[in-house]
Length: 93
Image 1 (cartoon, rainbow, N blue to C red):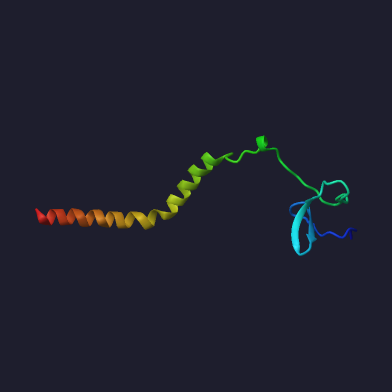
Image 2: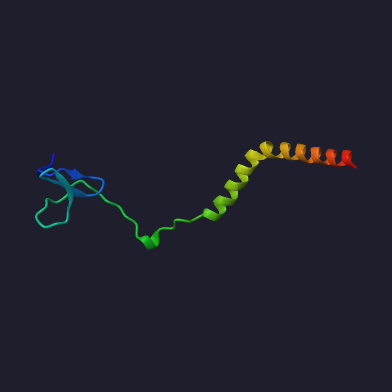
């Protein structure tokens, strides 16, 4: 267990300081604060991230897969509607 009187917000790396009923965050890098032990933080530079890597090919295959799954829900009503309109046009002439 660590020493110190201030609780630690592990998610954001800040010490939580409570004074007179109000809660605020103190930066953990401030001089006089205890050194953090056992907390490992990994980060990736913003220019190294590729948020849309593979998005185009994934979108094409995902669209095909989803369209194939919906084929039997769309085609029979469209065919029935076409046949009904063709029959109605033939009868009216």
